[in-house]
Length: 116
Figure 1: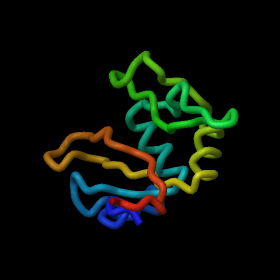
Figure 2: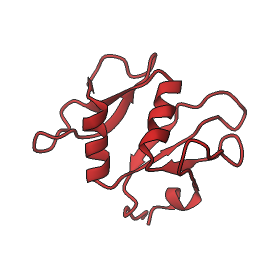
Figure 3: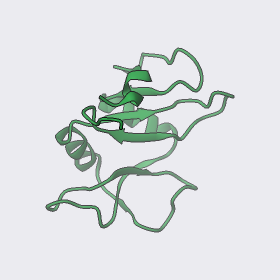
């Protein structure tokens, strides 16, 4: 199992709060993920050219001021979550940086990934 998941605090619903600022969090909750994105004005996206059999490839978000242009391809929430659920991914993220201020850190990861 991935070490990053072992060290992250599990968040099951929007009412769950991080233990401390800068804490790595992990969730599979669609509502938590959508709230995180909405607070950052981020929209669901994939990286163009990473598609598999007509399905979204690498899941990401189009964050204002970050990765603009390039290979970001907007997708619907339905497509984003269909891919997320189908691959049984976790959403690892932060709400705040350890020094305070909003964090835009996130990644998706398989819970079965082995750290080597």
